[in-house]
Structures are given as C-alpha cells and as structure tokens.
Length: 530
Image 1 (cartoon, rainbow, N blue to C red):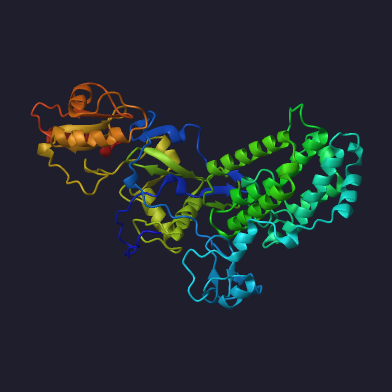
Image 2: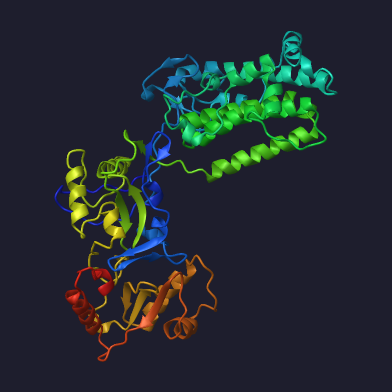
C-alpha cells in the first residue's frame, strides 16, 4: 500500500525518502527509449570538481532510504457476472480470489457453487477454477474423422514420413482442442493477434506474438512445413531422433505455449488479463495431459520442456516499468534533465527534456509516491524550474539537474550534516567528532562519529550489507587494525581518524570552507567540504 499521504502547503518543501530508481518511468518514442545518456553516465560519480568512474558497489543505497514500492494498479477481476453474462456494479458482485471471474450471489448455486453464498470466505475460489484444471465429459468428444481429413490434406507432402499417420492424428486432436479453448471463458482474448495500434508498447515487450486463430490457420494450410524449412519463426532442432513430422508437432505445441507466455509476460502479475492467461494455461495443460502428452515422443517433450523453462526465466527477468510516450524524436534544442542522487553523487535516471521530466514527476505523483512539495498539473512546471535552479530543493528524494551542468561540473551541492541519511541519529557536535566516514576516491564525507564504538557499529552494518566480500573476522579489533588504522575499504568507503593540529573537527570545517571561498571557479562541493 502507498504510505500515508501528508497534507502539504504548496509553497513548503519538506523531506521524504527516495523513490527507487527502477520506479522512474521510461520515456519512449514509439519503441525507442529516449534516455539521452552517454555510455558511462550511470557508472560515473559527478562532483563540482569533476567526474570519474565509480568503484564497484558505489551505487549501493541503504534499503531504509527508499519509499515502499507502489505497484501499478490494475483490476484483478472483470466487472460482469460470468454466469448470466451481464455487466454490473462491483458492489453487486462477488469476486474469485484466484481467477478474473465475478458472479452475482444469486447466480452462484446455478453455476455449480455448493458454498454458502451468504457467507463466502475472503479467499473464496469459484467452481470454474476447479473446472479449469480438468477436461469435462462434455469436452472429451473430438470429431476425429472430419478434422483428420483436413489435417492429412494440409500435410500431404509429408506422407512418406514414418510419423505421418500418428502425427496427423495428434495434430487433428490439437486443432480440436484449440476450438474448445476458443469457446472457454475469456477465449476471445486469445482468438486473434493483439493490435499494436491499440496496445502501443506490446511489441516492445513481446518479441513473438501468437494466438489461437493463427495456429489454427497454419494447421489448416499446412504452413508449418514451409516455415520450418525456411526458418520462419522456427527453432533449429539438431536432433537425429526427431522426424520431420515430430518437429512440426513440437512447433505447434511451442506456439500454443507462446500464447500464454506472451500474456503473462506483458500483463502485470495478478491483474485480470494476467489471470486470464493463467486460466487458459491451466485448461490447455489439462487437455495436453489427457490427449497429447502420452502420445508424444520423448524428444518432443524434452524440447517442449526446455522452451517452457526459457519462458519462465524470461518472465522472472522481465521488469515491466512505468512508461510514457513522447510525440517527437531527438531534438537538438532540448536540454536533458538528470535525476541525481546527492548521497552517492550518481545519476539514477535521465530525461530528454524538461517536458519529459515534468511528465515523469507527475506519473510518480499520481502513482502515490510522496514528494517534498505538493505537485499538481498546474504547478509542476514551476516546481521543477525551482528545483533545477535551487540546490536545496529535492523532488522524490533527488536533485533534478540539467545533464550538461553535471557533465561540465557547473553545479553545487547543498551543505549537509555529517549524520545525514538517518534521521534517528543525533548529529554529533563538531567539537566531539573523532572519526570520519568518507568516499575513498572523491573524499566526500558521509558522517562523523564521536567514538570508536559508534564508528564500529556503523562499519559492522556496512560490512553486513556489502556487495563485495570483506575479509577478516568482523570484530572491533578487525575494524581498528585493518580499517581505522589500516587502509582497507568496503565498497569504496573508508573510516579514518580526524587529523588536525588542534585535534578539533571545527578546524577541518574552517580549512575546507576557506578552500571553497578562495576557489576561482566557485565549484568546490559544499557537501565534500563538510
């Protein structure tokens, strides 16, 4: 759930946690990602003194620094009764917790529900969910002879194949199963190709569209023979144990699995359309087990199982992100805007223009993420302008800076307490700071400590969350000998004792501020100075 929203004065800027970089929406022109980044932009550290390639692990941020992820909201069920097929107000319907179906209470008993319809449990599953996992008696009758003659004619040029007779019987069974699936609940969704003019980003996600109608047509026309011969949407099967007809059977089965894979890949997990894919996948698997699996050769089953595994892996690795479309392509007069994390001094996202940055900010706001200032359609342009000009103003936990200013080091960083990043910590008095936590390369100071014990506790926390393995036993002597008095670091971070003539930390502050004051170009980082 979204975090509880605060009422903000539109002119007051507060403090909020960061939005995760993965939540920033993509900027697309058609299927082209408009991110204006140069190759090294996302692996560089940008400071007012210049930029450099970051050490491994530099971009690690404490999990507590982020707001909770707000998932893209999508309905889980359709708002019509699947028993009487009428649209209705959601208040008059009960919803299945597993599939996308909904029902009137008065229709449930007639639909085969034996539960007490006046007192359904929160996790109630409809009777149709159970039917999805099996082949019903009314679905077992397959018109073998009529369809078989159509399939045999379509693949007549394969008659000499040793698997021809048995293969055409299986293909005719599959053809009839497809007809059953077309009539099953939600079948219309899989009947024909998805129209990319209506679902504009579909082909950005799905590389190989497929549907029941296309498969049926290819079976009727025998198109699989030529497709495989010419390598059109075909898998090269280097398998001496498979006949040509078995390879055709594999490609038909693969196409059916592709239908469900595409649905689960494109749609948000748990939404009504995703659930439709789960319903039809379950029904197909029931048909497959009853009519196809035991009659299929081992080589076909092995290759089909490999394909299923690859689909599952692709879905696991996919990252469906928020996005928006822009009308124009690249434009020389546009000024790119970078979303910049001042804590790690790195870019987390870029947009090609102020207009796109405004759009992205409103998408995050409308998704429910907290912002330092109240954003509306009417004031967002003004607020972004203020953030671009004022180094103290943040939006969603980040500085928004023109990318050219970052690359040319023409920017400043707001002065921060050394105890920043953890609001529960009391900022140490300057007189009492004896140990500093710093960035090894840039010298940026992250925090000050009043004792070895407090520095050790911070080191222990950092060590436990480190990306790169850290040698040593992890006790206090390890910290003191190898880090505090040694030269070891964790993911580019070091701890060192304060070294000044007086031993007072305010001398360090005075020295650094003097350097900033006399700098000719005024580009010393006030954050680094502290």
